[in-house]
Amino acid sequence: MTIPRMFVTKYDDIVLRDECDCACAVILCNDVIPLMENSVLQSNKDVTRIQFPRNWQGLYLPDGTNSLVLLNQPAYDLWKSFQEKRYLSALGGEKLKIAQDMVKMGLLVSPDAQSVVLKKTQNTQLSAWLHLTDRCNLRCAYCYLPHKSEDMTLKTGRATIEATFREARDNSYEQVKLKYSGGESLLQFSLIVGLHKYAQKLAKKHSLKLDGVVLSNGTLLTEKIIAKMQGLDLRLMISLDGVGDWHDVQRPYASGRGSFADVAESVDLALAHGLIPDTSITVSGRNAEGLSEIIDWVLARDLPFSLNFYRQNDLSIPHEDLKLEEDKIIAGMLSAFEVIEHNLPSRSLLASLTDRANLSAPHLRTCSVGDSYLVFNQHGQVSKCQMKMDSPIADINTENLLQVVRDDKSGIQNISVEDKEECRDCDWKYFCTGGCSLESYRATGRYDVKSPNCNIYKAILPEVLRLEGLRLLKEAGELEVA
Image 1 (cartoon, one colour):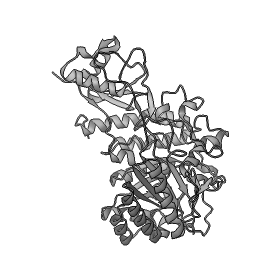
Image 2: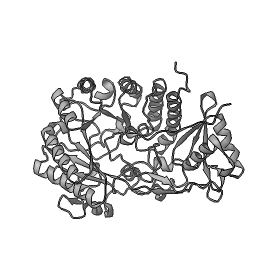
Image 3: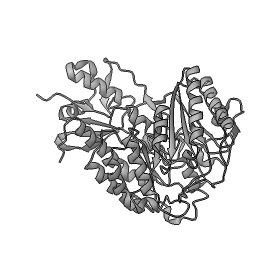
Image 4: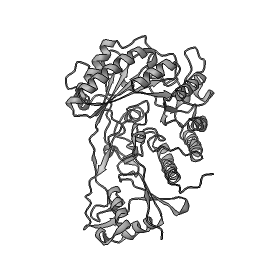
């Protein structure tokens, strides 16, 4: 007799740390339904069923602790048996264990409260973006920087590190994450080394965990830099928008020459020395048709990656062909998903495939802007988002810096999805959260509305769940692989 089985995504470090060129950490939520075996329970009616091979059923939970739960037929039958109210204590053995897990995930709920109650979970990590230089050897079509010849000094850099750790300590964070960026950050690599060594000393002094990542265009990487990064326990994120011309059309050198060949060589050099770079892929109208090629390229190298939509900014407005035409973007994304389906990775892609939407866990806000995120420019001024460094609201000498950021009402407002019109009744709201607030504001002049990319999200989110379900089945040996 087949026993009930249930699969969900395990939120390991890879899932939760996936890199992007944004304030991508989200503030997770969880359910507060107590596990009481003497309670009357009922199957959650607010689910969507997805059919998978070998009679496996996928259930999408718009208000659960997991976006997707896979059930074999006996487990699915058990869940359906709660369509009529039942006591959990009436079960025993493996069925009781599975039913208890269903309660924790929101598949089984109290008849008096059909929706899982979500509450904000305390974010344990404070992230800081350090803008080390405005200089860059590339001229990316969507760049939001004016390319001034200005660098952060060691003195200013150390002050930003001190301010970050001070805020982490005063606000009871357990970990600090530093994102070393530019411009091209590797033009200031000696500064990165000095600052991260200093950060390691402060982390030890204050008993805080430390995570550091270097955001780079990948053209200046050398064996020496790789070795130094590994010695400092620094991670690497490289921007790579396509294969060949699909990348070059968006990320050329200042001279106009394409950069793909050099970036590809750097990626392979890093892999050869044991440094696995995260890959950030910016999707626009220029490269959407080439997405399947770059996805095939990164999967062949087993690289962690994220797909991020182009964001209009004051310096990119003249580039009309970058804009996100819905049909073109959806077609390009679905073509890339077909490639993934034939080469399913070992890591979850729930947080990687849908721009700022994130299916890895329920949350109320798109990112950590305005809550657990500090952006320092080269002068030590502080902004809420790196795309708004021209509008600082504080500096490294400001007292209660994080509180100032949280209290600011003049700049970008990263509001709860429950306060966004047209999002409140959407089945995707706790995983999409209405997209990037800054993008919504540029399109509408308001922060409390849905993303201008809403139709794109709705078209691809179901496919992301389907891919994740297939990946889980493959990992469990339940999927025939050609």
